[in-house]
Amino acid sequence: MSKDIYIIGSGFSALSASCYLSKEGYKVTVLEKNDTLGGRARQFKKEGFTFDLGPSWYWMPDVFEKFFADFGKKPSDYYTLDKLSPGYEVYFGKQDSLEISDKLENIYTMFENEEKGSAKHLKSFLDSAKSNYNTAIKDLVYRPGISPLELVTTTTVARVSQFFSTIRKQVRKNIKSNKLIQILEFPVLFLGAKPSNTPAFYNFMNYADFGLGTWHPRGGMYKVVEGMVNLATSLGVKFQVNANVEKILTDKQNNVSGLIVNGKTIETDLVLSGADYHHTETLLDQNERQYSENFWSKKTFAPSSLLFYVGFDKKIKNASHHTLFFDTDFDKHAEEIYDEPKWPSDPLFYANFTSMTDKTSAPEGKEAGFFLIPLAPGIEDTEELREQYFHKIINRFEKLTNQEVKNSVIFKKSFCVKDFKKEYNSYKGNAYGMANTLLQTAFLRPKIKSSKVNNLYFTGQLTVPGPGVPPALISGKIASELINKNNH
Ligand SMILES: Cc1cc2nc3c(=O)[nH]c(=O)nc-3n(C[C@H](O)[C@H](O)[C@H](O)COP(=O)(O)OP(=O)(O)OC[C@H]3O[C@@H](n4cnc5c(N)ncnc54)[C@H](O)[C@@H]3O)c2cc1C
Image (tube, rainbow, N blue to C red; front, side, top):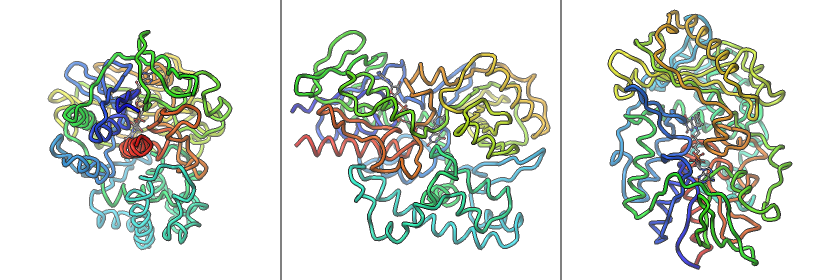
């Protein structure tokens, strides 16, 4: 087989895979349907403001270091990282918030002040979280998800009960303060499911949070995309934007034989797709798809989101670079995402103001605001609903942080379910893929290699290891290793 490979999409997983494959001597071409690279991590610029359209939390810096080290490089060869202090802030009521320090000793003190005796419990919780981090992120997540045996190690066998208990149970066993519970249950939301549906083993996210801290690439997450594109280009990867893949072609032996891109046929016998898995399968004939619509409809997807990118004509007070608004009922909102999908009655939301720490993202004296409300995927999406919810959260924001901001909005751009579908071909408009529940972990996730079409591979947040930027980097590595192994 030839060593020419086409990669569909240019999200983090595709960029990562393109680097590894190029290093292995493949001639790599990345085909991206949009006019810029980076997938969900694209950038939006307007009137001197710069926004990351998607990811904004830079967690697990070691995963990025490991990625660049595989090419003899360091993140600092491409971008500058600042550790945020505080890492983030959480609002529980009017002018009632807690800041998460970038220093563990301060976090212990904060816990103790909120609930006497809780620091001791936090310490043992974090010891377990750190040990799970070392097992999961340094080892397990790099396995290809082919066999259940991949999960069997002396460490996982000893901790098997943590796969069958949940984060919610584990956190609530010893901590009683509602505020501290919410803080400890927050990190697993990045994995896309409710804490009551996420195995306790995933507490390694808490170590990522408190132990490793929250970082910010100066200039925004898009700097990471640019860094990876630079690396890939230096390794020989070719990029084509505005290249919409419309069909994956196969021959009579079910081998990949080509792609139709913008109406033109390209011959190729090796394809890796970093586009949403479900969408990629729709590019094949029905009998060549591994997973039915019924299969996908039964899966737990990470939420979609209603997002607003707002330019403010003044500086915002009483908030941090990352601020969470957990002043309403978490369980009710979760129910309205996962159990009875509907627009949330009283949503939790998240806001970031990157210009508070990074002058490059807004003109002097102004603030770049990003607001996110998690929503059920596939939900109705209209301009009226978007507007209604903007008012809901901006009124709450004003009240909770005790300031007027509505009259200082210069512009706002929204992004919701319809845009996720249109811009990324995302299944039901999900924002960050398929959740990591027990039954959607490792070998139980959609497979990296197609079992029906030879030489068709998948990477990204719907396959292993799961949602998030660090897992996407890892996914690209796993997929390229498997391709290389099968191609010898
Ligand atoms: C709003 C939001 C906030 C997030 N916040 C964080 C965060 O703070 N931290 C974090 O770690 N993670 C976060 N995530 C998750 C993270 O961004 C994703 O998990 C990761 O970027 C997904 O990368 P990917 O490689 O799977 O694919 P994607 O980024 O989805 O890329 C897929 C690409 O394929 C392209 N494509 C689709 N169909 C075709 C086609 N037919 N032809 C050609 N190209 C095609 C798409 O245009 C897209 O560019 C967030 C995600 C969102 C949406």
